[in-house]
Length: 350
Ligand SMILES: Cc1ncc(COP(=O)(O)O)c(C=O)c1O
Image (cartoon, rainbow, N blue to C red; front, top):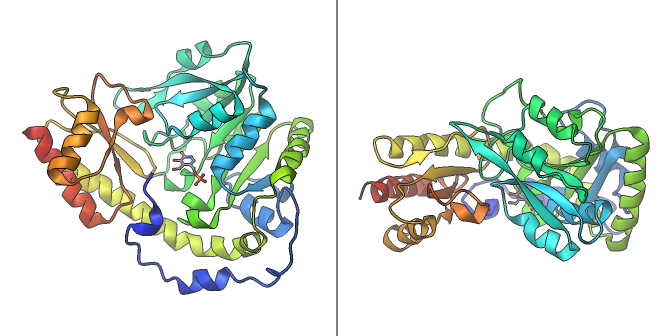
């Protein structure tokens, strides 16, 4: 995914530097689940009532949180259900943990949705968890309340990657604001500074643990042991978190404006060409479907070689190769996005 710190956002660095020198930084506080004030600040990021600091675990990144959860929920050889297409992050993490990933399909019929028969068919006696990503990267699809209900009905713990939750393009009451809304299921909802504040360099993420009290309490107790093994989150960034979250609003607004503007620019540039912009509800990426005259990898190579435009071939995310697609980052500078969008339109028409 595009690095948000090098795409020409002109955020003032002074308040960030001031926030990163909080009082107390000279003292090491080895609290495995995180410092209380930081956990409370992270709890307030969830769009659900009743997420308390005690139900929040801090980690250095959501990638690390995923890894801890694989160790918490699985033994070697166990399986985790994952959406396809999606971001390929989990493959390596699962390999490291000796866990198998079982894909379930997201289907596109003018909008993306969970293919529920495919989800239900993916469950085996070795399934230990189901991952949902909302908004999903790169499809930009958001989980509906009804889909969440069906996911919860599988009876498996839910790992909900909500790193892009603040980047839905419009409100929609049929959408689950967070998987922590699920009734009866053990839920781990992941977020972090990387996307929420465009600060991946600070290495701080959080998970909210939801579900029946006894289950959640036991999960938190076990996660404390896992986290204690690493103690990976630095003290200063935890102390800085409340202030960093105050600074995050305008940063998110700027990124959201780029995504919305970028989609508009892409739609305009592709109108009347054989390229199609797929529908999305949120996130930092857009999928463009191109003519089936060459594979997605060749489309990506052609765009780079002939136009200097960098896109990802859709297969990197398990998008179907029969209808070739490329994935475009929307948070690049609007000038670069406009040049890239024109090039894609031109290339598709040649
Ligand atoms: C859907 C999704 N989840 C998680 C991550 C990883 O985020 P982090 O920087 O917190 O590890 C990414 C990175 O791009 C992502 O796209």
